[in-house]
Length: 80
Length: 84
Image (cartoon, rainbow over all chains, first blue to last red; front, side):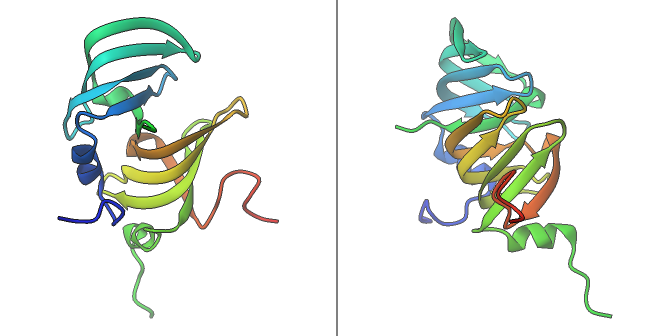
């Protein structure tokens, strides 16, 4: 419908990146990399194939995680 | 009196241009504003994240949570790049 380069509001961006590899950074500085399975208006996030990074170092790996939206600093689309 | 420019109208004028975002705490971001919503959650492109340690991280495209945003500087390109 619209050119992806055109102005996209937050909800459009979120729908564009469903299923894509993303990085979620929390206010604490902890990062989670994985595939975005879903997200809602609170920025609650369900991630698959998740890798947890603390201080840039891999700390843990999880199959599925739920992240409560109030902790989210940003959601970044990973370079592919 | 000239018609007022509402705060969010100022943000809307910045869509498509570079902005500098100062968060609560020490963190800052600069990038091209792609879009935003009523909470001032923002989609930014070609982003530099400035950490309190002085480290810089480059990010292609992000959705920044508006909850911890303190200030937006239209046309700003991050700390050290604003006023010559």
